Every structure is written in C-alpha cells, then in structure tokens.
View 1 (tube, one colour):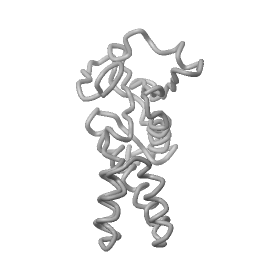
View 2 (view 1 turned 60 degrees about the horizontal axis):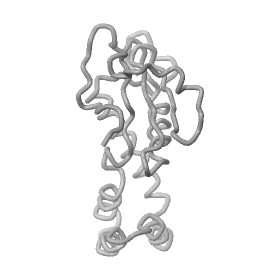
View 3 (view 1 turned 180 degrees about the horizontal axis):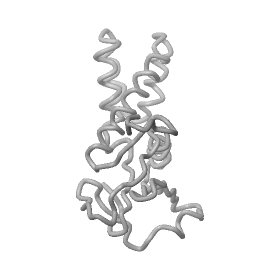
View 4 (view 1 turned 180 degrees about the vertical axis):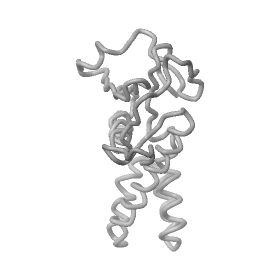
Length: 169
C-alpha cells in the first residue's frame, strides 16, 4: 500500500537508469525511517541516477521535500517500502520462533494474536535469553529483504563506500 506510486510497476527508461550504486546501510536506514511511521507519514525516495535518498515526513517540514519532483516516478525516483511490505513484522517473528525457539512457537503465535505484540514478544525473548539472537536474525532478514527488493526494482547496491574496479561490492 503506497501513497504515491507502487515500486513494483516502475518503468525503466534510459533517463532513469541507475548510474551510482547505493550503500546497503543507507537503504536500510531509509527503510527504518519509513517504518517508524505506522500511519505512512514518512516516505523515502531514491533517485536512480544520483543514488541519493530523499526523506520526507508529513508532520515535519524537511528540506528534501523541495527537491522531489511533482511526478517522482517519471523523474526516475522510487519509493522505499515499509517493513510490513517486505514481511519484516509478524511473519518474521513467527519464523524466528519456529527456527530458533520451537518450544515457544505457540506462545509467540498467541502473543501476535493481540495488540502490543512486539512489546510482549521482546519480554518473552528476554526471559528466554534469546533477545540478542532475535536482533541478529532480524538484521540478517532485513539485509536479505532489501537486497531482494533492490533486485526486484533494478537498483544496484554495495556494502562498501568504494567498490573495487571490477565493479564487485
């Protein structure tokens, strides 16, 4: 559910082809920025040509808003998804329970059947001594999801600020 346009239907033209790889850490920061707003009040747009990310928030006047064209899609911008669009919420927590804490998976299912699930989920993880494992699992899942998303929308990413001359990251 995107407010401006859907990243799954971006049309590539010679004018909006990506020329600069984007740091994976910057992409993840953009995802986190977008995801801090449960009501879709935060947006991040990636300029394919420059590799620059613009950050916008409905409730705050941000300098980046002035730089965003009226028709971002036509100008080669792509909207960064929310965590929920990449299945990085309840589904991820349930997968973690199945893989890492099978003895507690029914408890986790029960936790996610009511409001306030993440708070109670983290309490359970803390009680089971699994909080650090969850953070590592979640970090790997976020990286993998962003890499898949980049592949889906035709973005090139790198882990390094200076890719080597062979073009590999």
